[in-house]
Length: 284
Image 1 (tube, rainbow, N blue to C red):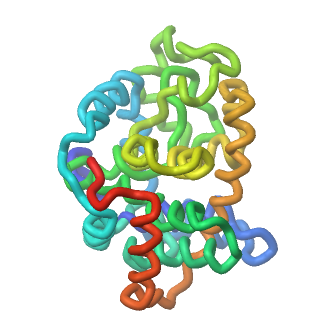
Image 2: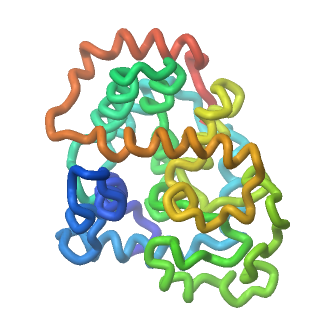
């Protein structure tokens, strides 16, 4: 595999999530996120081998410098959604609906349960950061589970054995429990592996309520919101807002069904909702 090219299918990671974190009481664990049975297992495994090799502290710093000035282009939310329909996520092995359908399914499930409208909007936009692929970013630097860099990699991270090729594993600054951080310093002080979550957080941070921003920024941080591997870096505010991240996660994973939503019929509602919280054009 050429690590400089995007992976072929943006659905693979999300399908893989379903294998590792099945819906309680509905499907057996072995039916989801099983790394041994899916035809895409080799693809997902290679995805994480490359991701874990190259997601170093210095790499993350370089990507923040490259992208967080948000000066690449202006787009509306719908422009970004239209672009996502050209992508398929190689870290998700269970469903093959396009990205807009997944986002609409997530948002509609949240709306049907009567949650606040900003929560519904978060469901719609939570993956918009995948537009990083517009700029030629490889998928291992866009999708996949996220985790802190600058400190010891937890063995709770999927395919943690592949970190043995990461340069930080032998760097005394980064390979201890706290690394460059201090106990309970707060996740806002922690650099996360680079990808669509962190990128979109910076795009949206001036517009949405704090719980929504936590959902966007940490929805792929499974090593914490499922495994609680990094509680030693979290402060009180993090713990409070991670309750929202945990609330969001089932909608992201389990709203996927084979029948696509009617995007044309739903668009007027979501256009009004977007206009309530976001400007016509966003800086990406």
